[in-house]
Amino acid sequence: MNEILEKSDPLLDRLKQVVGAGHVVTEAEALAPRLIDWRKRYQGAARCMVEPATTAEVAAVVRACAETGTAIVPQGGHTGLVGGSTPFEDGRAVILSTRRLNRIRDLDAANNTITVEAGCILQHIQQAADEADRLFPLSLAAEGTCQIGGNLSTNAGGLNVLRYGNAREQVLGLEVVLADGQVWDGLRRLRKDNTGYDLKQLFIGAEGTLGIITAAVLKLHPKPREVATAMVAVRDPAAALDLLNELQEATAQSVVSFELMPRLGIDLAVKHVAAAQDPLANRPEWYALVEVSGGSGDGDLKAALERTLMEAYEAGTVADAAPAENAAQREAFWHLREAIVEAQRHEGASIKHDIAVPVSSVPAFLDRALAKVRDMIPSVRPVPFGHLGDGNLHFNLTQPEDADADAFLARWEEVNAAVHDIVHAFGGSISAEHGVGRMKVGEIQRFKPPVEIEMMRAIKHTLDPQNIMNPGKVVEV
Ligand SMILES: Cc1cc2nc3c(=O)[nH]c(=O)nc-3n(C[C@H](O)[C@H](O)[C@H](O)COP(=O)(O)OP(=O)(O)OC[C@H]3O[C@@H](n4cnc5c(N)ncnc54)[C@H](O)[C@@H]3O)c2cc1C
Image (cartoon, rainbow, N blue to C red):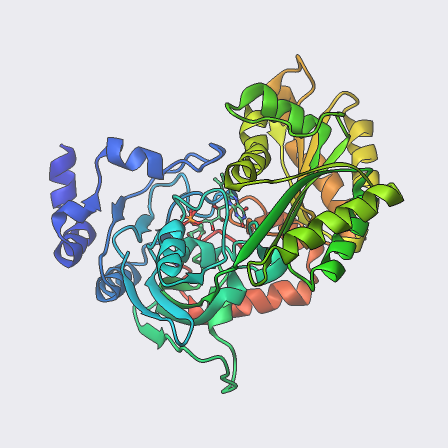
């Protein structure tokens, strides 16, 4: 029966002509993982998933959808955390997977650029750069699965933003299929180009609502000759901030990562995640995972890191520190940091936030937000951790022990709203690196000036007048 229906669907027939029947997926079992988001908050449905292998095929798919007014949901690695790559429940949209657009088109070591297709896995791009004795610095825990098209569409952040900037700052050029199927070839490899509006930046962070990124020219950097890492017990978040600034000065701005973690996060990671070990003995309340890199490889950076930590110890801002003595120890420190997310899952439900405030405001934000959530839910277990160096915290709240998970989660929006009000009071952002997707469409309207929302709608209307590009995400039209 299903087969008969499929055969009589002219859109599916046309898509099959474009990409081959084997790449128009309609079987329930194959579609299922593409219909639910990573956090399992949204369960959608779709007409099919189409897997084009070239930019021309993407353009032909978009034209077919545009002619029939069919919504398109672009999907990369499907690791996004705000429901952006999950179709709505009505089942009318076509998922466009970039999985097969996975070629590295060019690596120009002299120009320090790499030109990649949207479906390249982030880790493969890092490896290609490494083989050419270069660094592609974008790095996040999902890097073995997420794709560069998704990274750019969410303007991903991750672990090295402090030094290299977020995804937006890694891009020199883009190739995009527009909502009417036209191809914009903006694959420029230029460091300077002041010929009008910087259109590529519109598509970066647009979460698929303005067009489909099919390829990008990315910047490469010199490979650091030295990396020095330490796990540090800091007195409190204010002391962590002091340490960050001292380290920047001592290492000529070579701090790549500065991650803040609370006691409870470390305890849960050690309790639940294999091989996660606490390298510090005295059970401090706050940890900082610090990494500096660059230099000439003669040990200068490690020496500067250790000297700064010693001075901070004498000043009382640092209570203890464990410098990584080798690559395995460095990996163990990062494993502990990354284990925090998984560990929270074992403790029941969590209410999550991805917020940013000015770096200097992090300590005051934490004081106020922690007091507020403890006032709302007295035995809540906060695990605020993340990229202190970017002012970006994952202000996550684990449910009280023995509480009912559903009852706790029922307060998600109320708690989000209270925390976001505090973020706003500090001049912050309610989505630092994960995007808006479906989850925060309503919430951004509470904080952005109306004129900003109007400009977003005007851009959306101009580039996608039929509202077929990932409709309902980022901005309501
Ligand atoms: C364990 C884990 C750790 C993470 N850590 C971080 C982190 O540290 N920092 C961070 O920023 N994020 C993090 N994320 C979130 C996520 O990995 C990133 O947002 C990532 O950039 C998404 O890439 P993706 O290929 O999975 O995109 P998807 O989830 O497939 O898509 C994300 C959005 O982009 C759109 N899209 C995808 N491809 C295209 C394209 N080619 N053209 C147009 N639109 C497109 C989709 O429609 C969707 O709206 C993490 C996620 C997980 C699961």
